[in-house]
Image 1 (cartoon, rainbow, N blue to C red):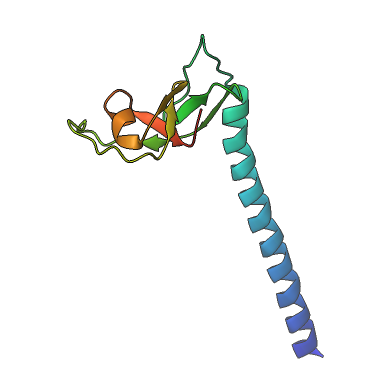
Image 2: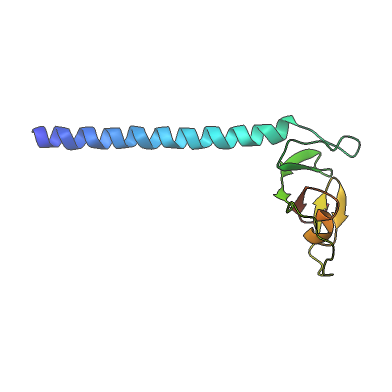
Length: 107
């Protein structure tokens, strides 16, 4: 009887722990998404928090890729469009010549 109760309690505690972990993950993800939703940007106001850049088309801040600290001097002409501050660049190298953050894809 004790063994059955012990296993039953273990399963219940595991379930509670799983629910707690899922709640924490949901809270963190919801908080991160709240940051981007609370900060609206547009073509006139492109300011966003650090590690974010403005998606002018959607008028919201989105998670961004960070450029290296040392700016490139020469770039290859590979077409892989990125967007930064509402301006589309042919690739991340050209974007990093001018900005600190960008996101992949067309503006």
